[in-house]
Image (cartoon, rainbow, N blue to C red; front, side):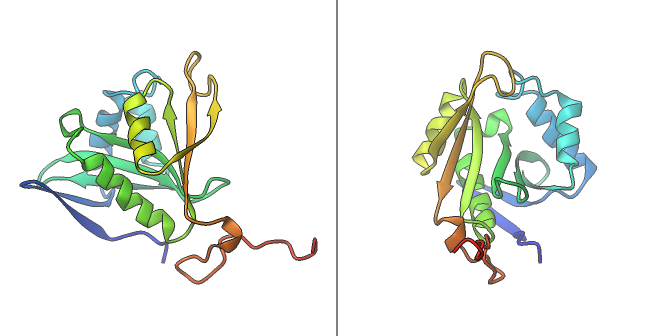
Amino acid sequence: MDGTLDVERIELGAEIVVVRRLESDDEARACARIMATSEPWMTLGRGYEASLEILHDPSRETYVARTDNEVVGFVILSMRGAFVGYIQTIALRHDWRGRGLGTKLIAFVERRILRDAPNVFLCVSSFNTRARALYERLGYQVVGELRDYVVRGHSEWLLRKSVAPLADWTTSRGQLAFEPRRDLE
C-alpha cells in the first residue's frame, strides 16, 4: 500500500466535489490549463507545457477535485526526498476560489501526508499574501525565506505544519519514519 487515500466527497453547499487520484490525460490537461492561466504560476513563468510535465511526473501524487463533469482544482504532493510531505502545488479554478474548497483540499492532503510523515511542507510566493494568510490560519509556520528562488524579485516562503519530530513518528505501516543512528549513542 502506498498510503494514498481512495476518494473523498466534499460538500460545499449544494455542490458535491469528489477528490481522487488523477486518472486521465484529459484531467491532466484540465489541471495544466488551471495552473497556466492563474496566479501565482503566471508570475512564476510556469506555462501550460511545464505544468503538464509536472502533472505527469510519476514521483508525485496528484489528486483532482471534480464536480460531475469538470475538474475544478487539484493538488500535487511529494512523499520522497528531504521534505517528505511537501505540497508542491495546490490550484483552483478562478470561479472556485473563496468557497472553502482550498481549505478542504489542504485538509484532505494533510490526512494523506500524516499517514506516513509527521510534517507537511509547502512554499508560498511572497506576492501571494492571501494564500499565506490561509496557510497560517490553518496552523502552518514560516520556516524560512528563499529569496529569488523561482524568479528574480520574489521570494518563496517555506512553511511547515508539524505534529511530531521525525524520530518520534510511526507511519501508518507501523514503521519509524526516521531511523536514528545508534552508533552515535
